Image 1 (tube, rainbow, N blue to C red):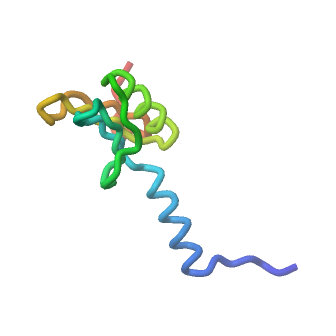
Image 2 (cartoon, rainbow, N blue to C red; image 1 turned 180 degrees about the vertical axis):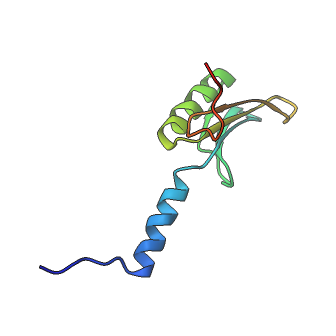
Amino acid sequence: MQKRFLLPTAQKRKKQTKDIMKINQHVVKRTGGWAVVGEGNSRDTSVHQRQSQAIERAREIAQNQRSEVVIHGRDGKIRDKNSYGNDPYPPRG
């Protein structure tokens, strides 16, 4: 029986896939409403009429990817952050 070895490119692909799963989701104001944008992406993932709808969608994505939701206010400043991944320093209960 032969052993399977990952080629360097396959190992790279595996690492890239793992890194992709940690993209933070930002909720930002747009002319047509509120958008969910993956960190580093140039295009909106989705656009919603209400901020609460955009936050809910961003939360779903972040929970799936085990990442963070960063909520921006109308002025563009960060209003809140929620983590859905492995926190380095989880709060004590």
